[in-house]
Length: 197
Image 1 (cartoon, rainbow, N blue to C red):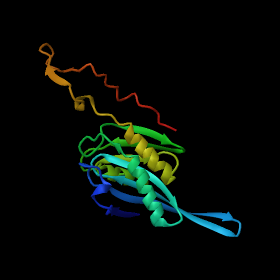
Image 2 (cartoon, rainbow, N blue to C red):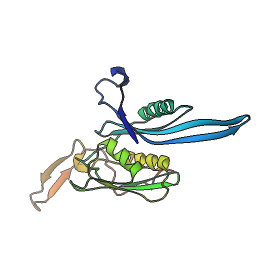
Image 3 (cartoon, one colour):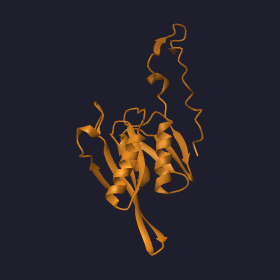
Image 4 (cartoon, helix red, strand yellow):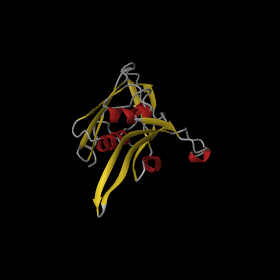
């Protein structure tokens, strides 16, 4: 696994955008038998992120490893998502599927660290999570696991108390917190999709 910060200059980032770091998760050599011999190509699975809630992945293919990595980075940049964070962890538990892979990602208290397999750890580290527990429930294929992890993170929602516009006051009768919400409808956090195929 390798890590490098992009050195192609300021034009690589949009104005006001945090610097993106990239990590190569997996490099595979693919040999195709053709007339006259074998044709070798390489595929590189790359994850990019800014450690502040933005992450994306890309699979680049080329006849040389540097070109495959470069293509993977370009694809990952175009697929960046923004993940709502709750301090050093995520707002709530979430599951997702991609192909044969299924993952479970859960928030954890401060000091827990990142407890996850190598492929999932890269994604969670690049998004900026410090305390989180994640598990791959089915396939261990790095490509599917990485994409399932990003799919899970894309389904995260802010807690109602984090949603802008809500005000909290005390009801005089019960002295219990009472939430007055704006007309904006906030989805229940326990009604999550099973995951995208």
